[in-house]
Picture 1: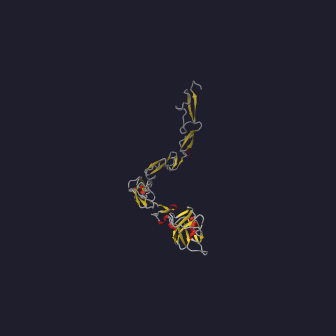
Picture 2 (picture 1 turned 60 degrees about the horizontal axis):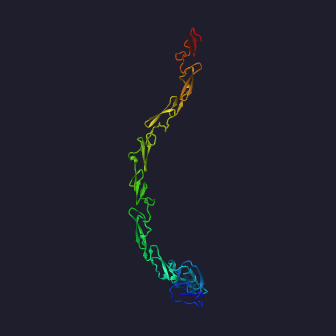
Picture 3 (picture 1 turned 180 degrees about the vertical axis):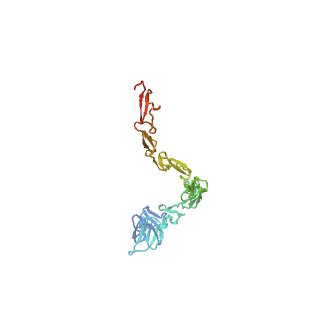
Length: 387
């Protein structure tokens, strides 16, 4: 029905309301010679399930339509199919129409739906395009879905000719109707849109016992030290089955990706290098002992003046036993040695009796006689001399 509302009247039940049968437009909200009118298309037992902008009970459907025409944001309404106990039906005013909400347009046993007889009534937009009605111009605009273009969205968009690349630079672009596809060039892998690092955790192209090296459009694998293979499969090298770094006096033990050496009994070290136990870094003998390195072992001997097993040496107290000091000398024990000092009245090294009248001393005048005495001496001037 065509519902007409003039500025002077608010309801089709009032006198003065006129019905107009033919116009070039389906909607005017008071801009056409002061009149507001709309042409609504009924959809029996249907319901547009969107949020309403208001609702109320009316006596007849034309009242609901008149209210919708006078509200700029109203483009359709749901009308109750059955009256209530006082003879009214529910009127729900809606901010859109079925052409823009087709997925929410459902069958109903309790309502009828009325949408303005939109220019979109013929569903002119193709390929899932949305029709936006231009009511005042009795026209429409199609809002095309991605991948389509044209007045009615009837044209395919060639994404492969776009100035904004949709595929990776190392991929080929394949245009399809409404879409496109990307396929990686030889030497590249992925979805064609994103550069792929084959060495990333999600790929695992190399053996876990190999290093992965990402290269332009490819990758390479190299087995870790201690393994052999092509990098995609790596096997442990048994270093003990061939020449290795272990000493001839050591045992070789093969380990995953490596090996170890352990010295045989009687030898010490890291198993790879011959060890001189008498070296400064070992200190196997006492500091008061000499160390003698032997094949696979060593020996210790206490220094002169010390006694012990060489690993522990104790000073010998030479003064507590027979020693080389003279009976007229004192003995002094020192660490690893001893010394002698003459008693008062005696001179020398403490070990040998000294003849002060000997030629090496010359204690008396050359014009005197020297008399050696026990622990001393005396001088007497020759005849004819005094002193």
